Length: 553
Ligand code: SGN
Ligand code: CA
Image (tube, rainbow, N blue to C red; front, side, top):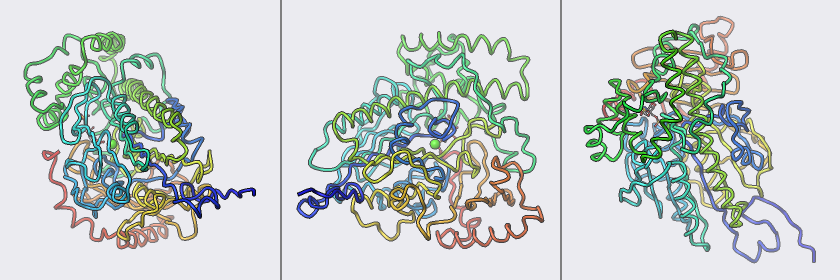
């Protein structure tokens, strides 16, 4: 008898006859999340800055989501949204100063209860211990690029090597030891390419001769928008530090400092408490010295050799550069380092894919690739994120699961990172609790990216961390397929409205343009309705109590 193959929804049943007799096989799950990796630095999204062949492979063999948005473009909050499938005002983790209430419902816990082996490896950044995992090994706070300190099932351990490689080593070890009779779910969360973009030894100097294309808005003058865009502190020219960000300290300035070492021994991490505060006062040099001195002698030597030409060039040009020239020069250095860090990331994703393939596990594993939010790579003259502007509200999302998702498909359906939890529960055959606010992406993934009838037609956003790093004012808003309405509040009360079709770079708010009066009214109504739907009513008032202040970071 010829068995008729009905490739239904993958992992549930591939062969109708077999289905009736054997228990359905549940898919393995890997969520790859990077930190501050943006679509503009992925060749599968059309980037000309860097080649990412392994991420491109994920896109070519799966689906590239082109309209995936975060509800709050900053690390801890984004992570909490993913874990819970709920917005920040519901899961309680509104800004990086919060402590995640680990007793609440999360999708890893639900999968664990359903028999999955669960692991969390890499950057966690939620200030409380992970719950719901059989194995966890997390970076402390932001983590370090070299000799990173991990907390592994509660014990601190410093690992030799480069953070992106080490996180992958740990991921592969977990997979090696996993019980083959059960499915696994692994959160494989990178630090890279977070500031201060320190490349791996093998990539030192790899981009030094490159000249990167400049984004159209690199020399933005912030006219046409309100105070928030003008008053932020994330300008490449003014807020990107030569010592920390651009690696311009001379070898003689990098010698280990006794006070720094004592602090390092105490905290095990240069990026917490005292150092972080010192950094705010402008002590990027101290922070970089700490990061640098985590390298061994050979690594330090190679580092110094690699950066010597850049330092020499800086000495020659620094007095003559000002304004636009400074932005341009710094932008080039920023891209050299950021892209080198992305290269290590891409290589390591390749290692993971090769491993799964070799073990015959690639096709029965749902792989999601995303970042905790997008990032500015010079657009508007900026680095960092936080704004509801497109470069960082939008985040990459690739999904590979060949038996359900057509290879090389793309989707314009409005997706959010709170959709990850219900999507994975859905595929694992676990009931999606009714309090989860995201939507299962399964109908989109399984119809070549087409949104089903009744799919969401807008996404909500709310950012809270102000006053703090980079001085991005608190704001909330709504984005529909065409328009974006934003309200900046707290020490300001300003609205912005963008027509993304005629102004994709968000340079001219049309909030006060009479031609947009009807759109403005409609968008206000939609925003109010959406806030009611997601339970974020009266947002200006409620949030005064949320942020604990920059000192709590
Ligand atoms: C650190 C960085 C900031 C960054 C925040 C939050 N400063 O404080 O530039 O915005 O993290 O980033 S640094 O001097 O330590 O590099 S997040 O991705 O973790 O939210
Ligand atoms: Ca981040």
